[in-house]
Amino acid sequence: MSSIAVQPFSGTYRAQPVPSTFAFAVRHSGVFWFRGSLSDVTATLRGDGDALVLEGAARVESVSVVEPAAMRASVLGPEFFDAERHPEITFRSVAIRLSDDGEAEVDGELTIRGVTRPVTGAGRYSPPRASSYGEVAGLQLKTSFDRREFGFDWQLELPGGGDAVGWDVEVDIDLLFIREDADAQG
Image (cartoon, rainbow, N blue to C red):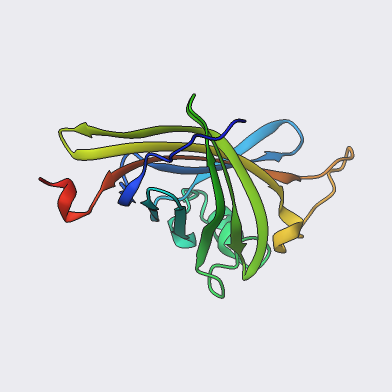
């Protein structure tokens, strides 16, 4: 990916809870994708015309798994998210690369269950533009990681062989940002 000469973000942009999404998927029983999302997510993108920083956080309790109650308890419990001891997932970028054709790569540090690991997300960005909401921009990223790296070690071998829950977690993030600086309102 070739980088752009000047990054287009200047100021502070805040992700809008709706329609932004933070979704994840993991193979279940070796035959289908178990999908979930987190609804209480915050993200800020700050640019000064040269450097660009993305920070975000998600409340684990906002996971979309609500029924059956036993499954929700398991997802929030110590064998998975351990929400009581680690109520938040956080991310902070260390490098962002944007291309003239809208490609984006973001290197950063993801913290889940108190464990911080490097991750790289790749996808697309939409540069800032005027809208009826003010100045808006978009960022869509995908990444994946082995859940064992973050202490998600629970596993059950299926009677016919194979694992009940896959080790690889796929993450799909789609963020709508609105510039919040006072000078963007004028």
